Amino acid sequence: MPLSLSYTALPAAMMFALVMSITPGPNNTMLLASGVNFGLRRTLPHMLGITCGCMIMMIAIALGLGQVFTRVPALYAAMEIASVAYLLYLAWKIATSRSFSVDEANERPMTFLQAAAFQWVNPKAWMMAVSGVTAFHLNDNLLINAALLTISFAIVNLPSITIWAAFGLGVRRFLSGARALRAFNWSMAALLVASIVPVFRHGLA
Image (cartoon, rainbow, N blue to C red; front, top):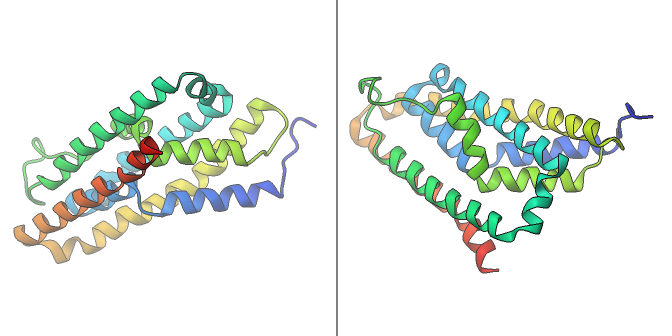
């Protein structure tokens, strides 16, 4: 039956989504920094953009985009280079963010569209989408399988990443001084740069 659901694969898929969504990575590092610098409400578009961007990516890969990169390795290599360059740029933006009280015209959190687009140069998002589509089969119908996987991952992803932004808001009151905030932002920038290491390891393998 085309609408049948594999109830044995679904829990495993959602557990995989939880592990990939809640563990440290570029998205969660930036959400933590955004929660500290801008608060939870202003970080909400960033969070929604991450989830929607991952959903679009997973659907695209489930419907065959992954085969394109398999057949054209140079295209995947170009994506890796772009991801490294953009992550370094974001790390610098985080490191040089000044304070809670800066003029909002000069300092803004990542927008919904920026966060959604970022997933296409986010190595961890690619790993999650490709691994999830490859490992979990919820339905024999290609379109239904893609939809079920995407919805399952979205249900888990948004609450998981919200924890990071909320934690940033929680520690915000301890970073009221300019020096403490500067140290925090540089630490977050260093963690973001560290998240690029798996890309280099893949390229050298």
